[in-house]
Image (cartoon, rainbow, N blue to C red):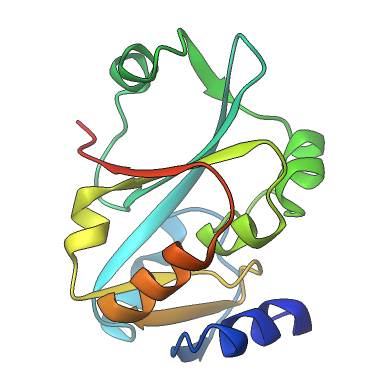
Length: 158
């Protein structure tokens, strides 16, 4: 975990359990982690709309996102994946390491958290690197979410 993220989590009293593992680039590759790390495993999608607005969508790793329905609900029109260079400039992240924790660097990006993630007792996310996973209890996810100074919302994703 990078030093700045660790300091950020400490400053806001966000507790976590750190798990180190081999690099995983997709939810599909992370299946072996389910026997090691409890709770809901998440996926985080970096999206943009045709108007140049960016979104980080955090959802249950086992579900598929209906991008058309989300775009309509947000009034964003068509959503598509942001590029690697946009990801780097907006969230200071590299492809394969997209995480809710990138929101500490957010520039012009809205965080969308699925209510299933929000309601989970335990959730896990990469700490902006794909060779580690942080396990958080709901109370700590809530502390992190509330610490962010960016547009954000908790919603029901289809």
